[in-house]
Image 1 (cartoon, rainbow, N blue to C red):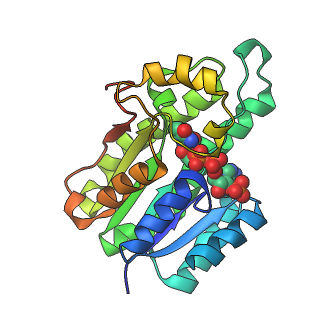
Image 2 (image 1 turned 90 degrees about the vertical axis):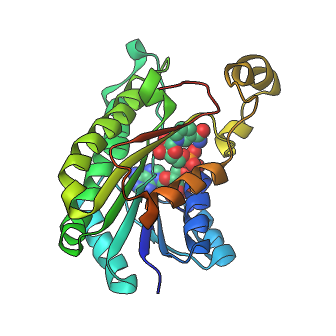
Length: 241
Ligand code: NDP
């Protein structure tokens, strides 16, 4: 049996591509989601990948959910922290609720998921933690003070934890995507896409979810054991760091 990989927000968007790519490589994949039962059921029907529902912002729910996945499939060896939300507003209009929801999901959610997986990874002397941050955590973005802070926090978290995991065979890395061709992008008017967004991207196109998934598959592999604390900027050259 292949290693067990848990992908948060793994039922749609970038996470679905990651779940599928890991399953194709022979991993036993558990994909989590927050509440969209219909999408999750359709995903399982299409792929055969089991889905689990809990809120990554809830520490106790994460602990219980991970225990259930481990009872079903075995110890989690690869954790992909992909679940994320946006609650955009210019700062003078941003509410504490918008701030807290994004911090609780995009930053505390990464702690809530990683912390219960960590002791087992240390004991088994193997682990892969891969977190999907964002280009906007690297460069900032108008109306995303909450999102940029949380996604930058994911990078700091990763660099600290990489140092703690190194001797225990655990690597901890980030992928920071730029504009990716997901449902969200389909809602952007063609003129904005052609006149505003695409000119910012040197390769001249959006990234594909499958391209993010290939980077995850590589970081999860045994061959990537010397790469830790890194941020892979997957953004078509839009921001080079
Ligand atoms: P989607 O909005 O398409 O999917 C988000 C997934 O996360 C869904 O499965 C959703 O579940 C799940 N989710 C959301 N909140 C929670 C929660 N509190 N607990 C558990 N699961 C949750 O996201 P994308 O594919 O667009 O983005 C994936 C990641 O990539 C995010 O972290 C995002 O910030 C990052 N990113 C995306 C970019 C893009 O261009 N799309 C660019 C840069 C970074 P449900 O289906 O039930 O709602």
